[in-house]
Amino acid sequence: LAEVRQKTGMVKPSSLLKPVALTRIPGRYLAHQESLPKLPVPPLKQTCDRYLAALEPIVDSEMLKNTQELVKEFQAQGGVGDRLQKGLEHRSRKTDNWLSDWWLQTAYLDYRLPVVVHSSPGVVLPRLEFSDRQGQIRYAAKLIAGVLDFKSMIDNETLPIEYLGGKMLCMNQYYQVLCSCRIPGIKSDSVVNYALNKRPPSHITVVHNYQFFVLDVYNSDGTTLTVDQLYIQLEKIWNSSLQTNKEPIGILTSNHRNSWGKAYANLIKDKTNKESVRAIQKSIFTVCLDAPMPRVSDEMYRTRAAVQMLHGGGSRWNSGNRWFDKTLQFIIGEDGTCGVIYEHAPAEGPPIVALIDHVVEYTKKSEMVRTPMVPLPMPKKLRFNITPEIKRDIEEAKQNMNIMVHDLDMKVIVFSHFGKNVPKSYKMSPDAFIQVALQLAYYRTYKRCCATYESASLRMFKLGRTDTIRSATSDSANFVKTMDDPVKQVALLEKAVKAHRAYTDMAIRGQAIDRHLLGLKLQAIEDLSALPDIFMDTSFAVANHYNLSTSQVPAKTDCVMCFGPVVPDGYGVCYNPMEEHINFAVSAFNSCADTNAARMVQALEDALVDMKTLLDQTPKAKL
Ligand SMILES: *[C@@H]1O[C@H](CO)[C@@H](O)[C@H](O)[C@H]1NC(C)=O
Ligand SMILES: *[C@@H]1O[C@H](CO)[C@@H](O)[C@H](O)[C@H]1NC(C)=O
Ligand SMILES: *[C@@H]1O[C@H](CO)[C@@H](O)[C@H](O)[C@H]1NC(C)=O
Image (cartoon, rainbow, N blue to C red; front, side):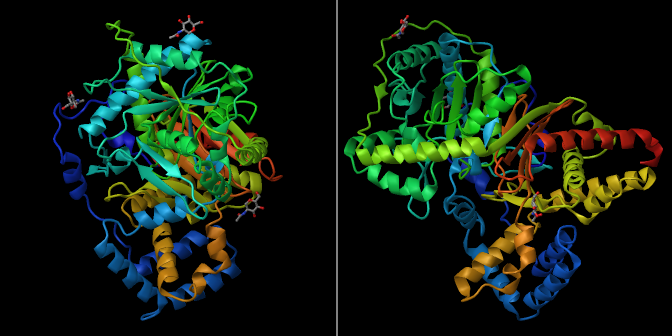
């Protein structure tokens, strides 16, 4: 997501996010939401024209010619396109957001690949200084207190509103990430949010050595447990889960969604199991106290931590120490590893990272203050009755998990030559600069351009999620193909960066093409007996096969988000541009012979350095 947080103006570096008011005003959040504009339905002709322009760098001329014909027919007066467009406009009038329900359903709940690697992003936090149980538990206690501090702003509706380019943003996602969970189904999943229950949840779940516990985090008077109370409770949990031979029940959640949906129906037939599962689903969030992972060099540390966040390292390690359906899971290893994995259906990266930034600051500030010790009850351990059938499902999930673990090719690096400072000194958007570097890296590696996805925030609109910035543009293609002519090249670089910036602006204003095309397609599925030709076209398939799936997720914390590729032969690229360095997480699959995360990282570093050199060689007056 492009540049949301820098422009908020409300979030000062290295300070806790402060509530906007001290008192609770019920309805404040709703009043804000009501004031937001609705997501527009872009004009049909505009989307058709922009679609053809987006195809130019990624399909050959014959395919393009064919598609031009199909598009012409589609948008003809009184044609199919017109009819679908009217349907969308009608839908837009009668809903808060014509896209959001459809998007949740098609992008997430109907998606059947495992959420692990294929959907849920991870976040790697800076390594912590402890390497023992005490350090792990102390940090976990502070972290829990930090999340609860953030939660109080959500509960009180005092969370500061974020801005992008002077416009207020939709804050809905913040209200969806706590107390929520994905629930598997046989053909489609659902996501449940318990925050609005009459009696909202007052517990978190803690998992250690594959054993789940309910930890109540509120006293009966509504105050939260203090850090040292949380410490004692966590220590009790730790001490009563020393056995490491338990069935990793949580690994079931990592399976293919249909398989898990079936296993789930079977699992919750048992009353005890059902209650235990419900307790996890309802909890405010989950804390995973992980066993130490194999030691690696400092240089490899972030990469190892990234895979620990994304999948847990396999069935021998921490993959069973999760409930992957849970929206928010904080992971703290005994070896000082710290991070997050979140289930993607309810939210994008930026709200998650804003929450994390707040928590990280909180943990720095909070000291263990001695409070008078009222003895607290032992946190309840969640029991599971494992039938032979459930045992078989666990074994299957373990095997599939281990295949995924072997298949994920991940590389996290700190690009230390420069950060946002360099593009800014040339008055270029740092995100656009990085995206053009990615195009250059890909082109140098494969001698072609590919369909590229960058997520753009639609949060200027009520219940807005994302649209796509198509970073492969004719201008980026012109730049990456002109390697040997430095004079021409710098002008083309500038043009490519500007084109990306312009696309970003268009996307965040709700005028990009991808969600509109998806809407027209889904409208066709609802209204027509057959899909219009433009959606059956090879160009459409190529345009939606994202060999580069990317996201900028800026944070104050020196962290990086990471995720898997979205196609079998592509890359997932996430980055956090800091002032003087850039954190990158690049993923690919080992089963694809053509992709290699380390090689792509190298190409990317070279591209960034070369682009800087190019600019440095050009007198500034000429830019
Ligand atoms: C939230 O509301 C509660 C109860 O009204 C109050 O005690 C607390 O101070 C408030 N906290 C914040 C951060 O506004
Ligand atoms: C947990 O076990 C350790 C080591 O045996 C002990 O020192 C500590 O008091 C125990 N803590 C609790 C809360 O039971
Ligand atoms: C994606 O990349 C793979 C290998 O790098 C290549 O074979 C394939 O043609 C690419 N797909 C598209 C649509 O560009």
